[in-house]
Amino acid sequence: MDVNKVKVLIQAVENGSLLATATKLGYTQAGLSHMMKSLESELGITLLQRGKFGIKLTDEGKRLMPLFKELAVIDKKLETEVELILEQKASIIRVAAIASVIRTWLPDVMVSFQRKYPEISFEIQESDGKMYQWLDQGTIDVCITSNMILRDDFIPLVRDEFFACLPKEYPLEAGAKFPLRQIEEEPFICSTCGNDYDVERLLSDYDIQPKKQNTYVDDNSVISMVSRGFGISLLPNLVLRNNHEDIKIAELDLPCYRMIGLLYGKSANPSPAVKKFVTFLKKWQFEI
Image (cartoon, rainbow, N blue to C red; front, side, top):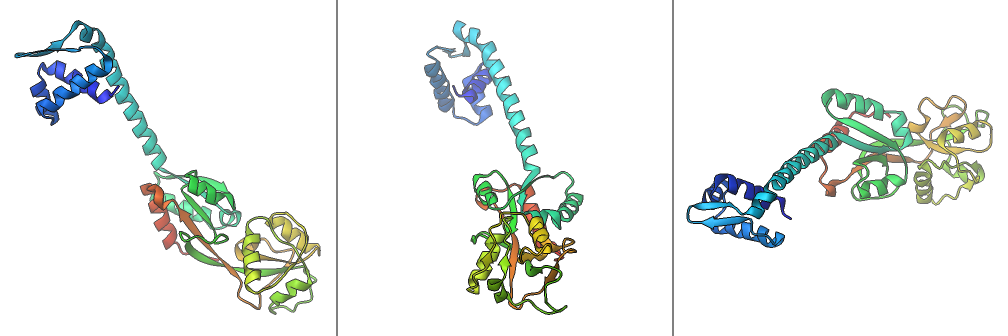
């Protein structure tokens, strides 16, 4: 049953006239009369007595009118509650980001953003590969990641250089660049925190086949293993920031970097809050 037809019926009965109600609501008299007949047909009950002096409820209509009014009130409450939910949802930005971004500059970005827009809040999730699926499913609004999986909708923000991670006793002079091809000769530890995709693509571009150790560990564990001489690794600057005291890091002799950027659900009609955050991120002065 169409609740809007019920609401029109209530107004028509209160006005006592289909013509007056049609004029007030912007319908033609014929159109409104057809609407009432359609409601009666749907219910299988005659609701109105029509006469040259106007309309009035039938006995069946009188019996149902209190319920019709309750239905109209409930529908209004439902509309109001839905509006409140949508308004609340529109003021929350659901962000998924890689761990190195969450540990470094993302908190500063959010604090600065909320100073400007205090009515907007965040939901933050740490993730790697799953965030693309979450974004496409509408589970999150924005993901901040590297371009580990090439997508046309990736918006680059900042370049994050890779460094060689070596045991402290590794024979490399201070300031010397580490030859990237040396990776083929050394036990190589690869992180499972998303950096493996970036590293594999970089090494593939240079046709370098690393001598991999079979490890499935996070960035901090990679650093710990390197410090104990288990192998060497490549990690980006964001991961190494304030986290390399126990190892030696060195620039590489070949350009190696990943792009950190964002993706957001453009096709899903992003909320004004999401659009503001995306614009804010594009203008942010990153320090890497």
